[in-house]
Image (cartoon, rainbow, N blue to C red; front, side, top):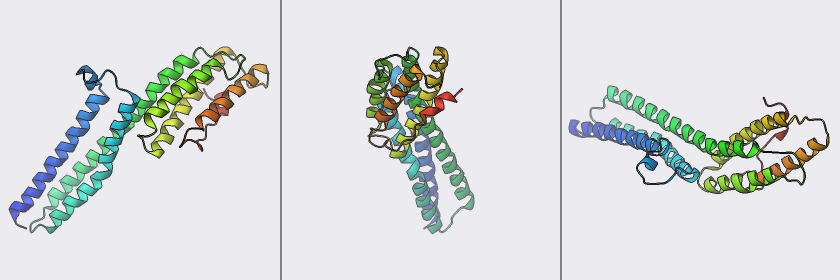
Length: 227
């Protein structure tokens, strides 16, 4: 392989890295920065759009080591491989992977923030009174959690589904604990504690009934130790 071919390999690699950087930044500008809404392309950034975007970024992130390995192999076959060029491209791929990882984490955070606002609004009006399950918990599970699950479950990976609902459950416990302090309900085995327990059992049963979440540990007893 002559110098011209070696130079071309470096040029194509550099341009591909630039393209992948551009895709990452533009995707996040349109989705995380709500650029698509501002342009009038869509009305809102839904959980489904966020989940699809996340999977796209994850797919590219997974392929980055393979792309790097491909170019490394081509450069190794070159008659004049450049050590400096290889080090430079390695750093570029490392930085690119870092940026993709950061934006994937940001999308996860955005997904959680969508449901967190809904949880906060719903649980702020929670009252512990019969009949059980309460209207609040019914709304929380049958409307909000179910809608969120249906929006993302077939798109995100099984591990991400567990991750999202683990974080969602933590937020649920924090918000519920805050509401219980406002209501002055204690872990005392009294009548209101019994009603609350019924609501919590309903929550556990419904969440663990979703495919992929059957073994999710919810630890709802932590509401009594959450600050």
